[in-house]
Every structure is written in C-alpha cells, then in structure tokens.
Amino acid sequence: MIEIVLNGAPHQVPPQHTLFDLITALSLQNQALALAVNRSVVPRKVWPERVLETRDQVEIVRAIGGG
Image (cartoon, rainbow, N blue to C red; front, top):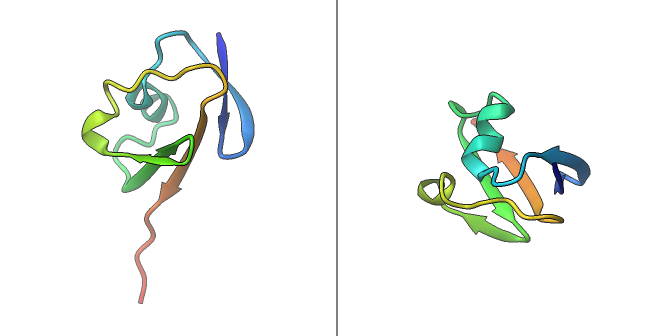
C-alpha cells in the first residue's frame, strides 16, 4: 500500500491505483466532482491514466447545485 493525503487526511491505496480507481473505490464515480492532485486540477478524461504516488495530495470537491 502507498499513503496519499485525501482531503487533508492520510489514506492508503494499492500501488498503481489511478484517480479513477480511487473514485470508484469511494463509490463516487457517478457524481459531479472536481479533482486536484498537488494543487493542480486534473481533467476527468485523465483520471484513468493518472497513477497515484506516495504523498500525493488529492482533493475531491463535489459540485452542489443551488440558487
């Protein structure tokens, strides 16, 4: 396992885990989300390719509608 920081808290993921794998494991794949890794926004089309590395800082932001 490798350790990343997920929304400010330590989180363990398997080696070679991608952003898409992370979102799927968290059951968030069908939600409107934005992801940033190390303070850089990662486009959704890149999630399946972006492999997580030790100490990556991942922020998940859920879109909330309102008026």
